[in-house]
Amino acid sequence: MGTGFLREFVKSPTTTAAVGPSSRALAEQMVAPIPHRGDPVVVELGPGTGAFTELIQRRLGGRGHHLALELNSRWAAQLGERFPGAESVCADARELPELLRERGLRADVVVSGLPWAAHSPVDGVPLVRLVAESLVPGGAFTQFAYTWTRWAPPARRQLADLRAEFEETVISRTVWRNLPPAVAYLARRPRRS
Image 1 (spheres, rainbow, N blue to C red):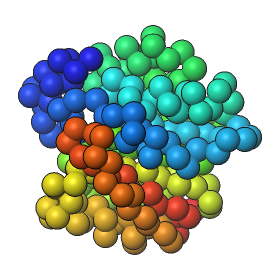
Image 2: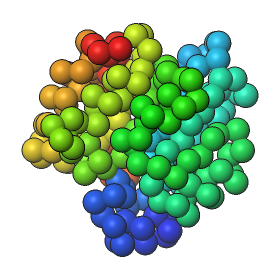
Image 3: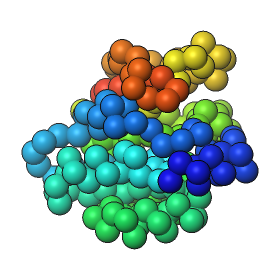
């Protein structure tokens, strides 16, 4: 999977968030808000080759609904084959509100592996706002970032958007067992739901 990931990154670095799949240690941080009981609706944005998908499926154990939105059509198809318990859709993350509406769902948790380019505002609306509006009142959103890029302007804008759209935003400790080292942002309780 790593070679395919690198190839996609080189072909399209602004739409592929990473040069390789995320580590198990980072994936654990990203799926932490998924409840152990009930039938939660979990949305995955930019699942790529499935580093987080596998843990989401394991955590759900057949419960709830897992909707995975992947812009890369080849990866979306492969994801659907590898994880039949996840509904894999080739779509842009900005289509999230409409896709949930079509299914009569609201998300309990949104897990994002998207690059910064996907979070840029469109018509003045940041992606984080669309995510917040798609969540139930007590919902949670996770997004990862590499530690060495956290001080770049897009990262600072993203953190400001998270703090504007959610009542609480927490940054994990550095996950050193990820290459490159990363942190997970956990945002809870959307202000607009």
